[in-house]
Length: 301
Image (cartoon, rainbow, N blue to C red; front, side, top):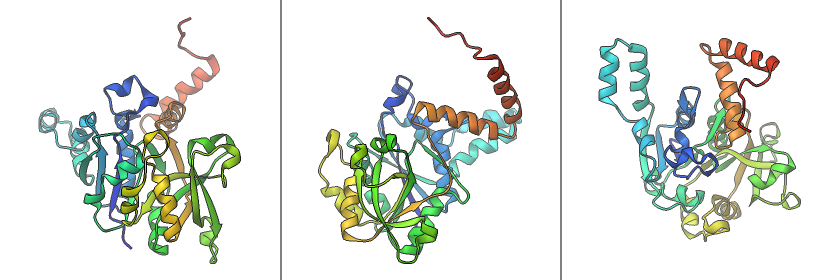
């Protein structure tokens, strides 16, 4: 098994960030100086992915333009002698082979993955969410790919979450592997329940971090009926896939920011800003100042 392609659904409305996402795709909201989608694409490329398949909608033109060439801007930067910026801008179009698939109707995350069927073809593929910034060494996506290639089957990235978060995620029932499963971090996934109540969750393992899927998931998705909210859920297709073949859950190592969540978005901005070698020292001094003085912003009554 060799994983060369990644599917990144990016057509969502971004309702948690309205009203800004009325005109700005949620994937283009910046963290420090890069939009969220760039973190996702760069993580895929660092994991050995050769082709990125972005599933977009009619409001995603800024996203499509971002990874394309802008000759007018490049000429202006070249005339101004801003060679570093010029190299950075040109580098965006060279990050990966990017293909775009249009999801004309928002029918759920399973439907978004199904839209990429013809481009993926008959080979395994990575699925990453467009608002998840995943940082790890090796990259989280690479960790999942390594497990998939070792085990020869689909893999679900998982993380343990507290009971109050069970209703936010697909929660998995798993069983240990006979060989110990990479120090217990890899298990066999038996079923998944999408956003269960606390007392209905089979474990504390949440479906977080992405997936490596095999092409046999596509016929299942094509037959999956609409579920809650009138949407086609990837979790429903995975549950059926688990009944047909071995699917693995891997508890990845790394940091995850849900950039579609306002509080986590602020956390990502602060922590990645502090890690920036150019901005970090001055930003840390600023944060220490407001920490001792209190908020410098007066809110409206």
